[in-house]
Image 1 (cartoon, rainbow, N blue to C red):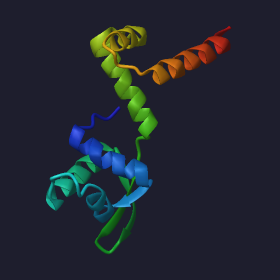
Image 2 (image 1 turned 120 degrees about the horizontal axis):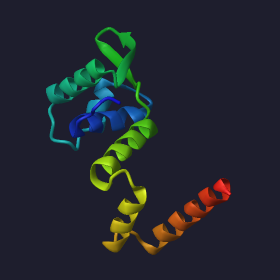
Image 3 (image 1 turned 90 degrees about the vertical axis):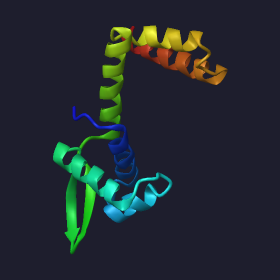
Image 4 (image 1 turned 30 degrees about the horizontal axis):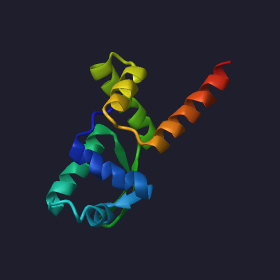
Length: 124
């Protein structure tokens, strides 16, 4: 999987959200970020070189981009890397530590239990 920096991830989020985006749209959606136009253009170029996005349309000087890497695919890959690096690949170790530190609300605990029960039903 392509390594994406935190700044590049902000651009990817815009592209994922819009499905297809021009640089003007990306800049508009990132208006609350303190980057200038050239910084965002550089991030777009880096993502192109890495193969994370591609140009799907060109009209004059306007390019339209779409993601090559799916958002869910990226999240799963990054999660696996973080779990491997910090928790020996164990999701249960992560969840236990997170819960012990008050990281889940009562609603989230109920949702998690429901998901675990569904998965257990599929295993049995």
